[in-house]
Length: 169
Image (tube, rainbow, N blue to C red; front, side):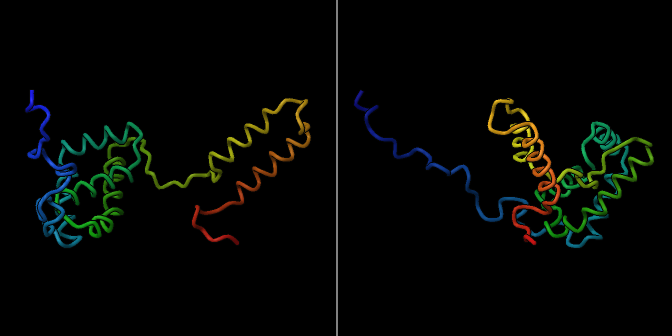
């Protein structure tokens, strides 16, 4: 019973499982393919194989955007040590075009992921519009005022362009 009271000094250090030796991970070593051309020579035969192209078509038919598929492929290549992240970023447009070519040749309808979202409004503005439109008649805002407020909020949301860090005019 006295043994249970003694502290364990031979236990692993917290966070020890999160550390590895330098060079133990594939992305910490020199890449297998240094140029875009070498990396394309790796990807093109893989995409043209029957097994991979069937899987691509299945994923595209599920509605997953082509840009997401291509980004996932290049990120996996970086994690496997096939190429660096900068080569992967330069490969993205080519991978997207190749995947879209596979979809076009199979005559399937796919989401390219290149279309811009028509709505610029944020969910906060949408929630505020819903709250204002749900106010009862005996509240401070009359129906005319709430309609005006909704129109002003919609126009302000549509005028807003860019993200959080964009410059204001």
